[in-house]
Image (cartoon, rainbow, N blue to C red; front, side):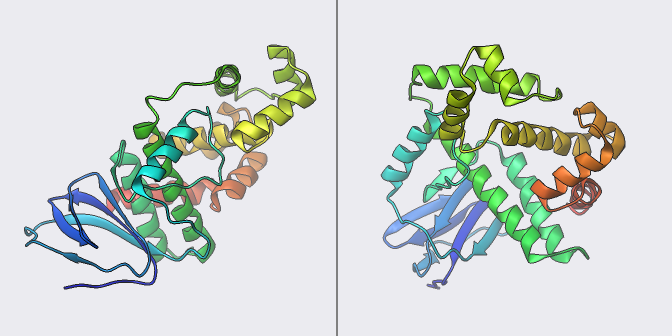
Length: 265
């Protein structure tokens, strides 16, 4: 049966094979494959789908977007991949591709499903998780299509700075510290870093710490206070405030959501 929807659709195969036709093109969506559908595009199943098939399906509205071809999407992803860190505003998802890391996508989908039924559900939180999913799909697409690109010398230098920041993220690092370490003028470094990454040095360090905190919250049974000190925060309250600013959830709510989705699999 043919159908179209007035929203974007993302279909990600989990098990089995889904046979979907969009316009004149046919797709076999197998585990890990991603099919991205623009609004108001007619699509249908073109073959009998075996029983037992599973897939993730999410639909969402977006007022501002640019429709580009599969080839243009690949070229844009290769360009983004040539920079050591893409800008946060860049979301590019090919019409058909495959996940490089399906486990990360699984976690995000289960968190989204849990949020819809949790007693602390808000539209803001679910929108944040949706954006996280779109960024993750873009990041994985960059990894897939950017292997053949070469980095400029400035990008290689910035890569060294980013790696140094990741290693030293638990320290109280300032822009002056980074400039001194790599013998840069402070103002020049600030402009270079912002132009290449789309964020300030302090924002980048915060995102590293929050990412590490999420891993510890999901994989270990350390207390919130212990995690705060492990990651270099001056106190537990500062950590909790920063975590909620970036994730729209407290560390405890994030941990509870993760464990509940694991139990509900």
